[in-house]
Length: 148
Image 1: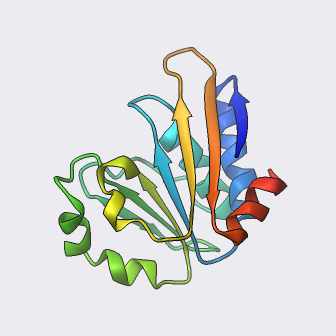
Image 2: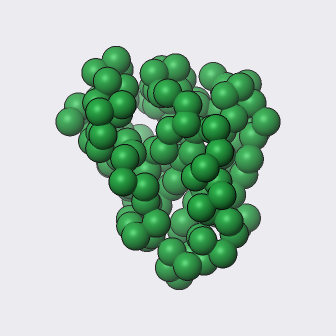
């Protein structure tokens, strides 16, 4: 486990940039945290590093796919009732793609998460600093956390 504190939204985005550079492709990142904890800011940084400035929370559409390099696929489980809804949009096919997959609100669909993944727990809100705890599950993710 590794803990990183970001004092500003820009620092959270910069951490997202560093994270995406450290991730192998394919990868799966599960994000946990309350509203306003910085999940989308982290993904915005990941998107900026891969080549898109269009990242926004896919709360109403569940998934946004970005044709970037590497490809970034961004899920939001906030409005889902259960994992079956996620599987209903083809989640298993997404898992098989050569891309970086990021899932916000992973705590809502724990049974859908792949066995190996990087879990990031974000806390803080408003003008408070954000604390990000990185929990690697699988050897490839241990090296990612070590590189941050």
